[in-house]
Amino acid sequence: MQSRGDYSNGFHELEPVEEKRVPGFSSFGRAKRRSNRGGAPDTRDGLANGVRVSDQLGEQKPLETQKSPPPCTDFDVAYFHSYAHVGIHEEMIKDRARTETYKEAIMQHQSLIQGKVVVDVGCGTGILSIFCAQAGAKRVYAVDASDIAVQAKEVVKANGLSDKVIVLHGRVEDVEIDEEVDVIISEWMGYMLLYESMLGSVITARDRWLKPGGLILPSHATLYMAPVTHPERYSHSIDFWRNVYGIDMSAMMQLAKQCAFEEPSVESISGENVLTWPEVVKHIDCQTVKIQELDSVTARYKFKSMMRAPMHGFGFWFDVEFSKPPSSPAKTTSATSVASGSSSMSPSREGYQKKRSNPSDALVLSTSPEAPPTHWQQTIVYFYDPIDVEQDQVIEGSVTLSQSKENRRFMNIHLEYSSAGRSFVKESVMR
Ligand SMILES: C[S@@+](CC[C@H](N)C(=O)[O-])C[C@H]1O[C@@H](n2cnc3c(N)ncnc32)[C@H](O)[C@@H]1O
Image 1 (cartoon, helix red, strand yellow):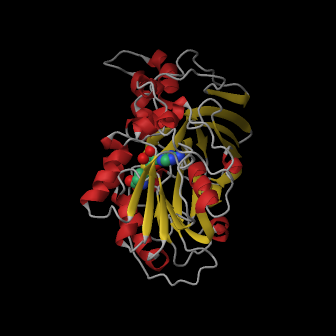
Image 2: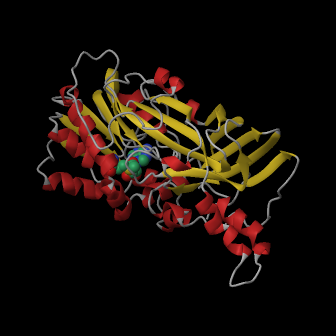
Image 3: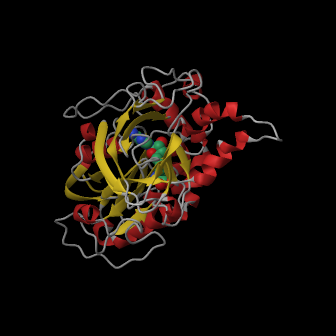
């Protein structure tokens, strides 16, 4: 298991100090999470094979004109290994909001795909590549470094598409494609959008192969945050200890808080849990975003609570948008989807509207609490103790999301927040 390295989970109030960490428990309760999505590998799995993906793919060399690709670390090996499990793909494909919106987006942009060359970055089982072939693509390069590529090849063959869909078993950073492409499609979004750090590979593919003005699906992504109240969750995990079969076990509460709220929690909340309109943490234009921008993202926020409530933490969610490139003359057909339209919590946010490239007709896949549920759910960073907020009370501060130096697939979350003259800091790691 990865060592804790130089980051530490922690929470402290700046002034006055109200809470202390309970030392020694910060690594508990985490192995549970990524059995269902390939973000936080147990490196022992990857290393047990004793092979690096880069070794397996040793014949493939980058073009001379390319910079040498980043090394494939043991963590990357384990990451790809986790995607060889059928369960992850089953979960993603059964997520109808996700899969149907991608299909819808492909059909909406059919005129830009028909007769064109496509790269599917991280093809998994090959489902998006096959949708593109069905939409009339001339050729689809379906790239995946995970062994799931073996199955993708079989699936492509069984559907009589082997002449159109070329499965490349390797990293996007390493494989060779000897032509420019018109379209990039990828489902790269991790929990809280940036967890897993897969967007960097889409950027690499864009910079290696995409023709100027080519189509990238999705075209834009936006991460949001908002203060949340969740009394039931708090009471279920913490207040429970106040009276256990008539015994006062409140001495357990500090430990319970540490264990329950140390790490970000992927769970479903509803609009009723959200105390204000969300704010944008990061808006990404996939045509222009640079890899370095994603190393660390900082946003300042200022919320005014719309109600009196205990605030238990901040919720994060994202949406992605499927717009045509700005210069493209192609017409898009109107489309509706279970997940189409703007994020239901966000459209009236002026700041959000300004950032949207094409608010009127873009197809949007939203993971907002008020959108149809997806396997991403929402991510909540809980405080160890709620803070009581009055209606119109201001909560302000900043959030920094950065790739862990030790394993870039992990995400460090640094939250600063102040309200009613008190300031707090919470640090956590999504692993
Ligand atoms: C979220 S899954 C999406 C799978 C499939 N496209 C779908 O929509 O069902 C991401 C896939 O990308 C692959 N992947 C991630 N980074 C990659 C890289 N740098 N090169 C090749 N494959 C990558 C993973 O192995 C995984 O199978």
